[in-house]
Length: 438
Image (cartoon, rainbow, N blue to C red):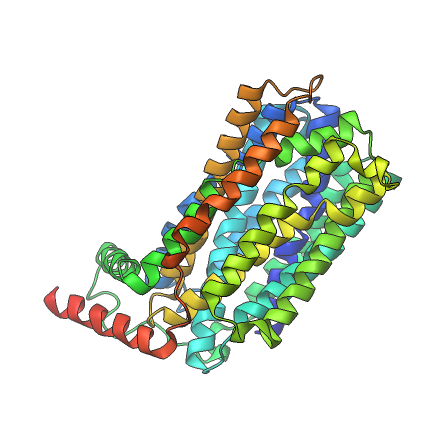
């Protein structure tokens, strides 16, 4: 489990390595304007919206007596095909339609793998009575992000050839594919298919049953309310990441290694925050913790305002130093905010719905991020921000800050504390009632 999921989450975090090269390729080689770049980045995440389907399939449909590892293998293989094509077939990275097709295929594979890994550690944690595995998953994720951003910036600075990065990541994914193929799922002590699985029940009946159980679980108030809050807190904030990226590279002419290292520092902060949460902050009431995190997130968005207004230069801080040390803080806080909710919902999830619930959470978060990205594209267009005119970027950042404070208005949707075993037993009883009625 340590090798399979630890390495899997590390690879998931390391995805920033090829994506950094891909973003520079789109900005500098294809010369996409800020709005188009962010639109492409956001649209590429569309396969992740279907995560509940992958989760339901993983919960209900066994392949060779296993229902987690086969899906990890499928996801890894799809990513190998995607990044391998970008690395070895010249036309794929130079023409926007084929580039987008590879991005969609890669994110399809990544979403299948992510959903299955989340379900695997949730199921394993409940089976073995081990709580808080999500914290260790976040640590592996952050560690992968540290290495990915560090080496991504280094490779771009030294080689200026993103395709080498694509090839290296494809080889890394091949290792994950090989590990998932050679590992037996029953070695984790997880239950196999039940006696009434097939042929007594058709695949369609099992999928419908799993979907019904997922809806029942999500409709539980102790799950539905915090889910609404975290999704809403993302949707209301227009993301201007693509615009800021173009400003840093096209206007400030910052070196790729600087931006890569800023991501490294951000991931280091995420790793430290995750360790602190696991050791100390879990005792803080979740509503109190999330309120503080949201305020920090809103404030950190103003750091881009300091850069745009060049206030940092007045304080004797160079653009390079400001981006290096502070540029990744808002993204780091946004990532960390997800951890308490992942732990909360994993503890509340009734047995048998691990894949469905974790995938629904991931899908809801992804959809909210996509909507937030589209909102950011619309805001940038409305303000007239383009490659040659960043004069209204200041107004966009201020609107971001104000929007990030709005979710505090419905913070009551976040529970004061984790409901733990009590909430899970209530969900389990309701599922049993639904099954009996069916």
